[in-house]
Length: 252
Image (cartoon, rainbow, N blue to C red; front, side):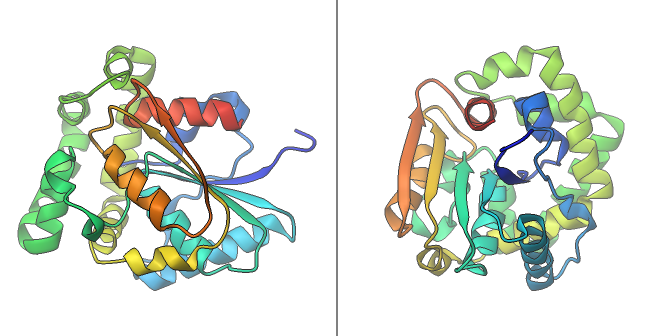
């Protein structure tokens, strides 16, 4: 599309590049959605590879980085390494630093994150169980992940046009991309709040008021800590994936 903003999309976890078109439709097909499952597992090497990719993709032009859920952590790391680049960031249902608040009890993925922080063997076992579920019982795994869906995510859960394709997103992430998924969660649960002060690019945050995957308090904390937070769009009645759907359709 002539004049379209060059956009790089960083998916959530569990997640995969396919979630972009699943929730954003054809209007976002021109966006670049890197397959992070193909990256090195070393955290620094992963981000350096993505930084180089964003630089080459931009080729001197403005670039918009969109980070969904745990993908917000990835987008912020890339932006921090490109302080002079012409970037804008849109963080959707963002997963912020866990050390900035008491969030885990309110997060659907709290047990996974807590295990990654304190019980690495249990965490590895949980990831393996998720992978087996994605391979042999993707419908059941999807049902369990959305068992506590809130707000407009409940309608998405019941929509076969979302629920059935999302099973393939899970399979992509948790089978072929299992090692990458595990590595990113291990990196995410480490303290990283000091990174926020290094991101001086303009940031817009999109957050569902009913989100129980990444709670609104987490988005509000990010907005307060980022030096150049431009706006926090609190989307009434929306939750994790419904907020992404709204944000993508607004940005497309």
